[in-house]
Image (cartoon, rainbow, N blue to C red; front, side, top):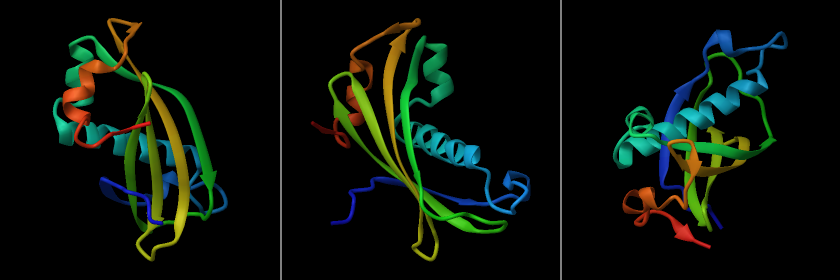
Length: 136
């Protein structure tokens, strides 16, 4: 069964993202995943910067990444996601795939939301996410 991805963003590997072996350094995958989440939020309403100005911030509490294949210089790929709500957490299920269809990364990212530095139930985001998020 194919995952219900609801958002995707296209990238191309830049040479400065490579390590000594000529493959994308593992830390850069987290950058791709994070940028995809930020662009997804922006597509729904206020962006990350605007939310932070309001004192609201999504905070990553857990990241689990499974590396399956390497990206190399010039590779084009898609970073895609879908979201599930589990109590106060929003769990982003993310995947990075080469344009050939080969899966490079599968990840789960748990996020909670804060207002003025204090944890919230995440209800501030319900109007944006209710149409897209499946509660568990």
